[in-house]
Image 1 (cartoon, rainbow, N blue to C red):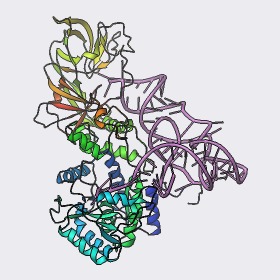
Image 2 (image 1 turned 90 degrees about the vertical axis):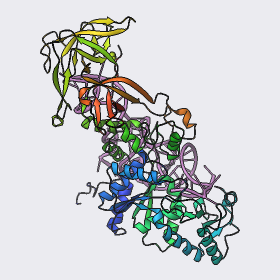
Image 3 (image 1 turned 30 degrees about the vertical axis):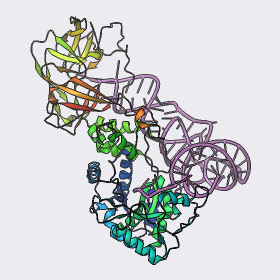
Image 4 (image 1 turned 60 degrees about the vertical axis):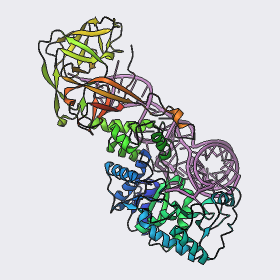
Length: 558
RNA sequence: UGGGGUGUCGCCAAGAGGCCUAAGGCAACGGGUUUUGAUCCCGUCAUUCGGAGGUUCGAAUCCUCCCACCCCAGCCA
């Protein structure tokens, strides 16, 4: 504090600065944030940023974060989404304070406040239909005009609002509107709709209500009821803030929350719009909201991405007011980083080529570390036999390939079988169709866990499995869902940008024996190939989803 | 062009008048280690901060004007 060159505290993002300031000045005693999803779809990677921010802020300042569903529109919401969202937030590793909350818990209070505004001449029942209302609202550059119902006596509006609430008014016939300013430069202040008639069952309140509050009339009041101190939302709500504040100022609320906006996450090659994701589901482009190609939390989970990787990625993102597009490579980096540190290693031959080790007397059991840098993760046994499979791509008939360019098997040269012997390729055996059917090799004795004798320098290391003592498996290889990096931008026909190769199935791969009963929820690194996680149920045949490939610095192809 | 917001390396960003001839991460590119062409390690990567003026001994940081992009005209959130 005496050194002028030493700043008092780490700067942090702008919201952290505001919170520290609020705490210091006493404007706020306790930090309370909230994550307020609408249950109209599944959570995606963009929501994860908001979740990490809101829960992170609460944890950082010793406060609480609430999970509250903004369920004010029964037309689009459902219990299925509520359940999925709760599961996803938990899986991400966050705990909310108190019960799961719902905007619908406050419908009674919200209605009381609506009556309050009516009684105080600050709201009125309007009978303009949607088209007329749009016309009266004016445009960006022209002020709006007062609704002919604007000066209706409070008592009359009150009676009408009660009729709306009772279900005596048809949808579209009336709305409750705030009486603010039809000439406001901010269009949100031109007498916004507070309540609309919706004769539709709500997933929690059933048919109790026939009117539902709009977002603007609900959100700030929900925050106030819950004592939310910092209501953090995305940039597109900035224009709604004056309205948020209008309610805070004009209603007898139990607390005065404040809204702050930050830039939402955009990722190239990725769609983060529930509307568009729902379209992919509805059109059958993908399997469902949890299709492994989806950027949803459930899709990423099924894909084999860990919650920790998602959290680390989110924490690497800036909380600022710029709306940039983050390169998907940045997310992939955190996925790989986490998996590299934690994924047990195993071997899988994707495109099997039979190898006969002609000088192998009898099978044996080798053992291999589950992780090259973490001995505490233990070892597993690797059956070695005279008949093996290696990947067809790991052998070439072109003997002119340099050792540097092709670190795999060629006739006459050596290669190390990962965790096993050094072998030499002796001859190609062809089938009747002329294709390579088998490779005859010979092992160099004494080279398990040891270098070869002089003159035996393997070109590289390749993976393999025993032919008999291995398991057949199906592999589902995923690639990006969209061909266009800006799939999320504009309305360029979404379905025309789908990558036709986003999923390819390998029906006849072979995985090492230790994977015969691979558990669900564990992501393995199939050495030299990529990260894979078990799909389906534990009793099914073996199917693995590709989580993500290994980084591959120019696999020189001869 | 009414209101609101944003512009710093290919991408994300720190930066709050001198410590900036501008952090860090991703990507890329060199090199080293390696029984994964992975990991790891080491190195390279903005004389410049959307542009033009101005203030100042001194500006990415202050002022003025201009330019570009994003959001708002749902009885969606």
